[in-house]
Amino acid sequence: MTEIILLILVVLTMLTTYCLYKMLDKRGLYFSLVLMNVITFVLSFKISNVFKMNINLNIISLTQIFTILYIFISKYSSKENKNIIFISLYSNIIVSVLLAIMNFFVPAITETISISMQGTFEYNYKILIIYPIIMALSQLIVIKLYGLVNKIQNNIPICVILTYIITALLYTVIFYAISYINILDIKYSLYLGISTYIVGLPLTICNIPLIDNIVNKQVINKWKIQLLLLQKF
Amino acid sequence: MKNTTLIIAEVLICYLSLILLYKKYKTDGIYVYAIIATFISCIMSLKQIDLLSVNIPIGFGTTTTLIIAGNLITQKKGPEELKTYLALILVTALLSCCFLNLSGLMESSEYNEYANKSYDSIFKYNLRIYLALILSLIPSIFTSSKIYYLLKRIQNKIILSNIFSIIITELLENILFVLIAYLFEYEVINIILCIIFRYTIKTIIGLIGSIPLCIANKIN
Image (cartoon, rainbow over all chains, first blue to last red; front, side):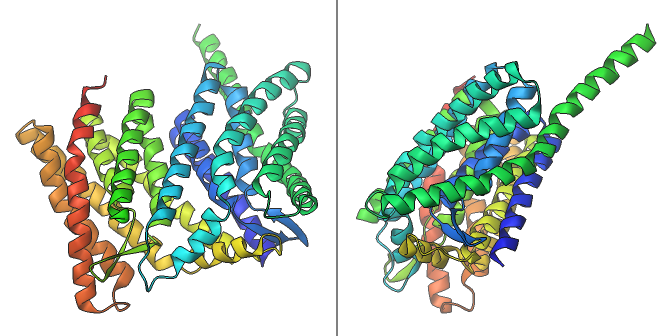
C-alpha cells in the first residue's frame, strides 16, 4: 500500500510540472517550483517505511524541484537563476513563519488536532528553521554544478545524475545532521539520510524523460521555425 | 488575547508578503502568494480556536488575502486574468489535498515515531474540510472579482469596490465553508454562531485589506 501511494505521488509531481508547463510555459515552471517547495516543506516532517527502508517523504518532491531547476538552466537564460532562488526562499520563509504562528494559537478545548500539530511542527521546530536556508543553498549548488557539468559533458542524463549525486549528498549531510539533533541518535539520522538519498536516485532517473521532453522540444521547434523561414525565402 | 495578537500577526504577514511579492514579481508574485496561501489554508483550517464557547477554524488571514489578491488582479489586469488565478488555486488545493492525505496514509517509521503519528492524525481523513475550503474559496473569489469589476466600472474607487465586494463574498464564503465542513457534526446554533463570528473577523480583515490594495495599486 505504502509503495503504491509513493508511486502515485511521484507520478502526480511529474504530471503537475508537465501540465503547468504546458498551460503557462515558463511561468508554469515557476509556479510548479513554488508548489513543490511548499509541499516538500511539509512532507519533511514525515518519515515513512517504504521498501523496508526508512525514508523522509520530502524526497518525492525534492527530486522534482531539482528537475524543474535542470529544465530552467537548460532552457532559459542565466538571468532567471537568481529569481528562482529568491522566489523559493521567500516562499519557504513565509510558509515557515505562518506554520510557526499557527502552532501558537490557543486551541479549543474539545479539539484534538492541535496536540498533533504541536507534535509535528513544534517538536520538529529545527526543520522549520533550517529548511528555507538549506533549500536555497542546495538550489544554488544545483544551478552552479549543473552549468559546470553541462560545459564538460553536454548530455542530459549524465548531467542530471551527477548533479543529483553531489547536491543531494550535501543536502542529506546538512539536513539530517541538524534536523534530528536530540530527537534521533546520530547513527539513525545517518541511516535515514542514506536510505532517503538512495531512493532519490531512481526518482531522479524517472524524471529524465520529462526533462528531455521539455528541453528538446524547444530545440525541435527552433529547427522548425528556421526551416519555415528558409522555405519562405 | 493571545489568539487576537496571533490573528493580527498572521494578517500582517499575509498582507506584507502579498505586497512584497507583488512589488518584486508583479502579477506573478500574486500567483506565487496564491499558491502559498492556499497551501497554508489547507493546514490552518484544520485547527480550531475557542471564541465565546464556539469552535472556529483558523486561517482567517490566509483565506481573506486570497480574495483581496483576486481583487488586486482584477484591478490591475481585468477579469480575464482571473481564470489563471482560479486555476492555480484549484490545482494547489487539489494537490495539497492529495499529498497531505496520502502522505498521512503511508506507513509510519519507527524513527521519530511521535512526530510521525502526530502527522498522520492531522492529515488523515480530513477530506471534508479540504472539500469545504475548495468549494468555498473558488466561488467566493470569482464572485468578489465580478462585483469588484462591476463597481469599478460604475465608480472607479478602489476602497468602495473592495468594501462592497468583501461584505458580500465573505458571507458567501463563510456560509459555504461552515455548512460543508461542519453540518450534522455540530449543533445548529453552534454552526450559526460560527458563521457569524467567522464572518465578522474575516470581514474586518478584508476591509483592512483596502490599504494594501491601494498601496499595491500605486506600485508600477
